[in-house]
Length: 319
Image (cartoon, rainbow, N blue to C red):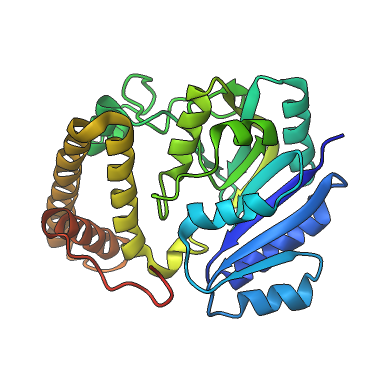
């Protein structure tokens, strides 16, 4: 019976990481062969905590922040299991999660990549199944049609907001917070594309699995909790820019320069509209604090980067 290698990448997420590793220790199951942690030059004591509290973990300490794709590839090179689970440091796996995913892979040889149902820390569903980016679903997001007409499949956008995530289904993409891949498929497809520092590498990987003839499947019987922001929360404005940068790379890679230009234009429209609407809301309500202020600033930062290339100061330890 195949065994599981778990790869986790962490950057300054000590408390989340502790919970993640405890959940694997308690709920991982007998088929977990090894847990490999790649630490991206954390300065919060994460690697020291792991060495002291989880001596069974294979700890790889990078001297620099390699980003998500490079660090995961480093872990994949050391993994020896038949099944390869890539998990974010801010994820807690539930009992039976890995067993359900492995069972599906073993009974469906056409599946190369699978993922569980993911809940937020509030217990609400996180929509981890998505469509590949297209001009149409990007336009729906830009104009908020996926909010207004969320129950209509045509307008429900990349997140497929019309679907309840309660049935096993072949999907186009899975969010990269919790994955399990078949080693044979990874050897054929290759690791994550290292030109993506953070974000969009999951969409790219799913597309490459699809292009190689492997199915990407959502398995709701397996469950996990994703708290979100374990690493990106340390520099959320900067990571908003990283998301834009990654998406531009994705569009150029899979749609060429014309596709990249279309996404760029739609992104400028998107953040211009949000900036205007949030500014009007703040003026009309007199509320310039809290979430409104943060979202206004985020759109301002993103729009400035798109138009001028200037970005927020990078956090300590980031590249």
